[in-house]
Image 1 (cartoon, rainbow, N blue to C red):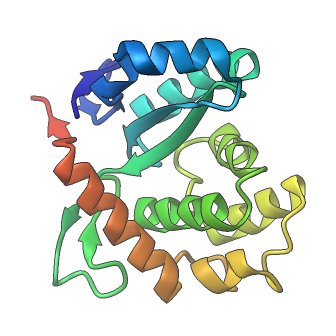
Image 2 (cartoon, rainbow, N blue to C red):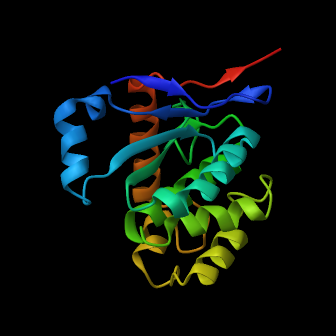
Length: 190
């Protein structure tokens, strides 16, 4: 496995693209030619409130209509484990609201994958300082057709939209662990 940087434009950056080198094997290239059901896995290392993440996601939003049937895109959230953090167990660079936004997006990805990307884009459209806000999560869920309060997403992330649901926090920790194993890090530039 190898990490290829996509972009790093702002002082706070944690955006990466992870493509397994095995996708370049001749065997897989031949499979692509023979089959339309093989999808290239793309993992973007992001923080939901990071300006770089919103920029990267907006670029992918323009590309996805052309390649969506050929890729399997996911977000890997960047944070640091912190046993002192009472709600999330991780410290997010852009604050607790970012942790909540990460959880909200992870739960939507798990239980409503067909509208997950639209949910993320809805949050991003409101600006990075609103990502993680419970009211925005509920608004975006309604916009993309998710029954948050009565469905699995709400159970996962918290029925109130807080992002503090037990399952969602576990998904966040799993994502942070994955990011660390892929050596995706955030760097604070002077």
